[in-house]
Image (tube, rainbow, N blue to C red; front, side, top):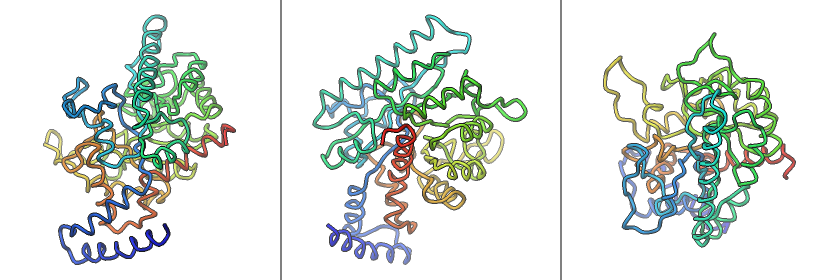
Length: 378
């Protein structure tokens, strides 16, 4: 095994030479070596939207349009296998429940989420030879060795809790291992990034502090995607475990409130957290002028954000969260079957194999393991 890796490393040296000489494309043997490397490492996507269609294996339905918007239909099991993605966090979307909307509205939202969790578990059980639901980092590594895909479950909006902390324990018992604290709007936990700035940013609420503590106790990963800046720093101060941003980018390259400033990225890294760079065009490319057409974002833009965040926060704090079947998808990485292109682009830029391995799965799995350690589960 060691000899095989060493031979691959020496063979890849020829790839670096090709890139340095300015050749546009690799020869087939080099491409095959890169493909072998991609398949050898654990690849994890922290942000894919959950859909009951994702486990379909009938190629006649592959690519069928779905009802959740123009970026849907980019993530399913067939494409996951074709692209060499080993594991993914499936974020179950939660429609915003307003803080005052207790009772039937909240109960219906919870029932919908639990129904989706149970349906996904049932479908995974039916396709157990191909896929498994995972609840711990080692599950992903085990599934990879068995040639299966690992799916972790997450909840996209903490408004589902209402004011009831016990819902978190129930979700955890059903296999949920990630909670995005807020969606596009404020909730009882914290304020959201969109349209929110100082001095109106209230940050993390007192109830939100209880939510953070309960996530730490249970071993649920806290996701700060969409959180306001004050919420972000409040959570970092309150959490005993690392937190992540499941999908985002660098605000220095694209000035959007959902993206992280350099100071935010450094603070996240200092707490052992990870920023997962997305493939969402509006978060990758800055609007050039008011009302002007934005140029099409490409995979090179995503790598520019990764490069920048690695420089300011360190290589151990950056990962990948495509947001496929949300807003994610680029012309040269349209769906999960094409994620190999990201590995190719990183290697073409001169990333070491160890850095690519950390980027794809090592960093988020390291943070996940620490979340478990804080919860006393390791």
